Length: 216
Image (cartoon, rainbow, N blue to C red; front, side, top):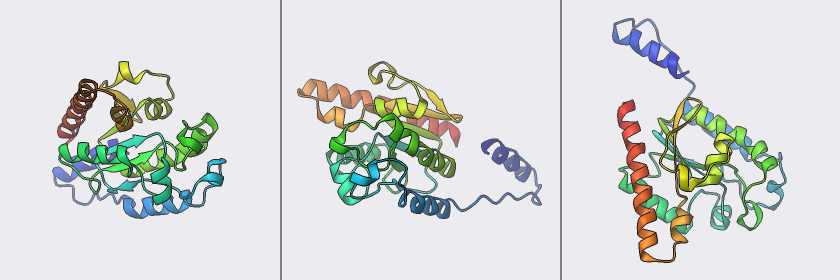
């Protein structure tokens, strides 16, 4: 679809105004998908959740942030990254020159795993198609995976986030940059380790910003 967009853009630029491509309204498509997610019973997570957490943000974002799954606060409110880790993510997004309203924030799974455990393979298999549909609708310039659970479940690999953070991957031809989950930064026990984790994350985000800049 991105290739078709580029071809049509070229023809419009040379004056072929008769060629018009009308993409489905992304906000409507996203809202339709959210309603589908809100009725999902494909895995057992729906039995213990309080609220579905489909994700939130712009319907036409340059950047998508993906975590592993909702925590307790997110489950209570039905919104992603609204606890302490979310506050840290908000600060990072703000420093990048964006806001929650101009990016999109989601998770690998849309319901809270009990006890905030990692999602099981069958849970990911049931829920990942929703994330893939979101990505297809939103057409981001770059995807940021927050932590190894998000990275490995998106790409179907078994990477170490310590070794792979900041490196460039691709999902459906979309650049992917993995970085630390905000919760990892919060778990650091010394000022030096916290500072290092924050700087590493910021250096990763500078790569994200460079990708967005080059795609304009």
